[in-house]
Amino acid sequence: MTDRVLILGGRGRIGSSVAEDIATHTQAQITITGRSPATEKDITLPSGGQVQFLVLDLAEVDKLREAIANSDLVIHCAGPFHYRDANVLKTCIEQGVNYLDVSDHRSFTSKALKYHEEALAAGVTAIVNTGIFPGISNSMVRHDVEQLDQVEKIHLSYLVAGSGGAGITVMRTTFLGLQHPFEAWLDGKWQIVKPYSEREVVNFPSPYNNSGVYWFDMPETFTLPEAFPGVKTVITKFGSVPDFYNHLTWIAAHIFPKWLMQRRGMIEFLSHVSHFMTDVTNNFSGIGVAVRSEVTGIKNGEQVVYCSNLVHENTAVASGCGTGSIAQFLLAGKLKKPGVWPVEEALSTDLFMQAMVSRGVKINHHWL
Image 1 (spheres, rainbow, N blue to C red):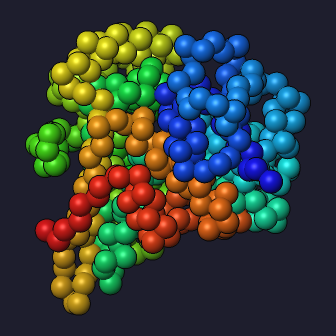
Image 2 (image 1 turned 135 degrees about the vertical axis):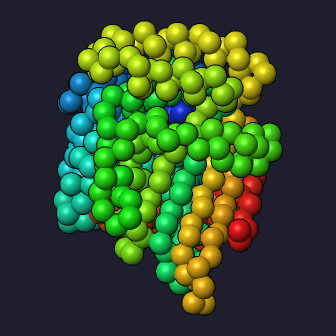
């Protein structure tokens, strides 16, 4: 019997990349959804009968429940997740259907993790934060932590060129992440950090080399300390290419009045302006992504640093690899872990490395 995968928000850049990956690596029947009827130009997916389209608004609770009940796996790609509740996950648990998402916001992740016991009792495997960052980045950290006897510090740095090929949603996510200070795990205690502060120049692989990154609120800020007890510091920093976008974002975070940045209309305005600008700069910056994981700890009684680097030419496609590979393992029965988990607690390093090799995603590892 053919597996049935439902991708909510599957017409967007990230959702369509997830669908593309699943269509390439499995025989599953894929249904993608959107809030309005689709035309051929809206959907750039593999031809043939493997992919079909369903008009569905998440607010249509009965229709959503029916679509989930008719699926073997549901993948939630309908961001931004700042605005989402955990109703899709709740419905999946009620219907006994496995669940993945590409969520990237602390509040949503917190809401989802509260359903852990319900998912465990229902035998449902639910994995959140499965894209590129968070997602592949978290699995890179797990790999690096496993090289050490004891972990002390995790430093994650992310870089996106232009729009990342991810459409306007990535712009909304960026500006939404500037609205509030957030808690970070530093020196063994929770401390308040200002978004887009403390610029740091990080040496990424070519073509990005030395690039600026800034504090940014991500779910792994709090999921990694939970996953790896003993770690005293977790740093998550994000930056853009070209660098002038960093300076514009810094102005939005530190100069614009807070009340203005917390208005939805302002977020939409800034997102559309930024998307228009990246349509121009993408031509010379590209739409790639770089992720750097640097883990400090103890190995054979000595303090050491282990580092992993990933560069991919298309951010959206990389996100599709992260989520699509986990979907592939779930459908094949290679991954089964009832409960609600962040990806670093659900996906083994062996499976992760297998997935990256099969997709041609190269991750370089080295001791510093």
